[in-house]
Length: 121
Image (cartoon, rainbow, N blue to C red; front, side):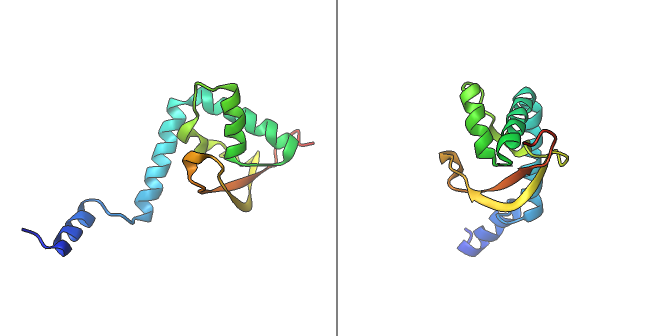
């Protein structure tokens, strides 16, 4: 039989709880897979993000998901939202975060993005 300490070591050896590199790789892999699986949805969401950015300058994923969900209630964006602001010719991180208002996000901090693309009024 194993002692508590030995079980903990075995658990950490088979699946580490804290590994920043593995966590980043898992996040990027999940976003990439969602981007492939939900390509058309992501394109529509990016159009919405640009529309919002042209009007209000600063945009969060919550802002985009709110409009997207209204237009496409049966097609949730999910993890593909992690790719919304990848185009650095259109978006710049505004050095601010806010708490997400979506219940599923549990008040997680999300980035605020500044629209720097064409058509900004």
